Length: 401
Image 1 (cartoon, rainbow, N blue to C red):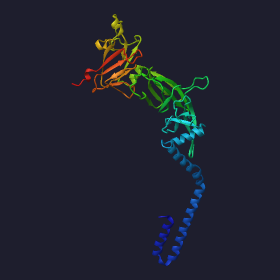
Image 2 (image 1 turned 60 degrees about the vertical axis):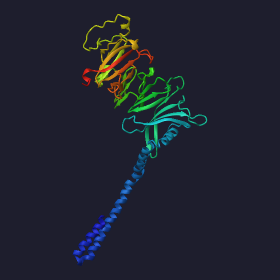
Image 3 (image 1 turned 180 degrees about the vertical axis):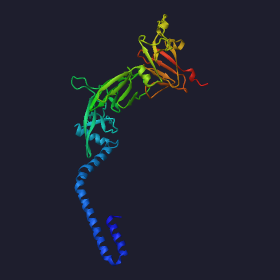
């Protein structure tokens, strides 16, 4: 109950107890209630005078901006926002949008940055050529959002074709995926896909370069997903040359660090890294016994020499012998693994009976329900011809009794 009404009710109660003074008590109660009502009105007026301007000039516009940002960055109305940004912030007209998306380059949980793939309309006004050499990729960071419309600032613009004599274009079309402060541009329009890697910090988009996927040049890729893991300011990519680590320091430095096989195993102790060398690597074991200190002796016969490959699994040499019959021309061997082992070849291989792991280091695990379990690996760039074949078998302690 409002305070003035409470005062009047109290006055009526007191007046009933003192009937001789009833008129005076009711009159005083009414005056006090009226005074409190006037005070409330005056307080409201003063509050409006003090805070009213702030409400209409700050709080209300801020609420409009919040609603507009939430709605326009959503998938349904984002095309309207993008068209506004293209025409008002970039100054372009008659442009087609091939790809668009939101990014969280600051890794702060607010995906308000934009990435746009633009190309000019044809003479007839159509958008029929998204592979146009005139395509550009624009990465934009949100500056301010004033009521309905935002103000975006360009972080970087990547063009497909070079402008002038400086070779700065991407050449191939790119499809982008974001991983926190990192951007991964998958190349298209080619049989040999690769990845363009970018990192963002403090308003700078840094290019780490282009990296081939394992097996891309041999057309042996068995998975279209990018072999990437990103945690905080670090990202790992399984590239043909190495597993490459990309890092952004607190000072905004962009670092690139290839991971050795030992570092891969330190990160995932279940990994069994297969490596092939042109020459005997220093410090490697010469047999499948990692404790062996034997001196390596080259094979004498021509057939044995052909299979005398420097193939190692976590530092231990894998024994290969010439194949017979249908396997003539192949070097064959056996690899015993635990059910939890992640076989990670550092060369392109074709597999049967193994399942690809989606986690670092993106190797293969034993699939008991399948048969046979085979890994064939090429060396000569011809995906129909392989140098060696490995029969994958579970180790004795893994075989059910």
